[in-house]
Image 1 (tube, rainbow, N blue to C red):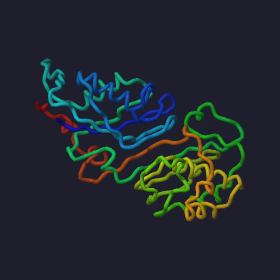
Image 2 (cartoon, rainbow, N blue to C red):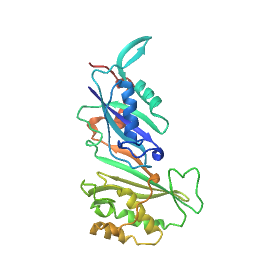
Image 3 (tube, one colour):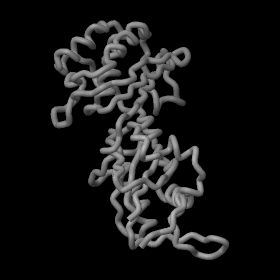
Length: 283
């Protein structure tokens, strides 16, 4: 079997999250159905991580193993050939999965690659519209905060998240059994233009709803409902009651998942000849 990685982009508005759930539409379900149509048999697709209902992605990564007994034919000079052509497969897959989800790119990867367990860092952006009136253009991608925010205080609070901390206070449920120790390598609030803010955060690991709780806390700082020091206090105590509310999902986008350089994913693949993404099918 040949392992294939996918770079995915989707609007979370019409998905009940990324992971497979019975009875609802999810990103994993739609991708698995599309790949299964091409392979003419069920194929399990693995995602780099979970995004909740309403959360978007511009850099989600997934992988699957193309079954060794599956045929994939395309025409070469008018003749059918058994080859796995990822450019052709990308077009076909996007024709199946619908307009809320897109396969941006695909790449052959080593059998040791795993979209989730090989990842070394993930990056998110949370977008805020801070002005009195709503925007119909940004309503699905930005959280609208009408009251004026103190950006300097929020930036001070955000800087306290940088580094290695226990994020127990920024986890929304105890059902998440993963480690609460995370190393944050980027945490900054940007003022792109009047009223349009972006909060960027990157870390080696995230606990459940961590980004949205940090954003909810920063907004309370910006509204003078708490001070910047409260972020440090919450980190030190691990008490969820000392952090702010969970911001809504539609402002959040997963932008990037990083992997060790030996897997030669899109950062390097874009510098190589596209012809290297055509492999003879092995059966």
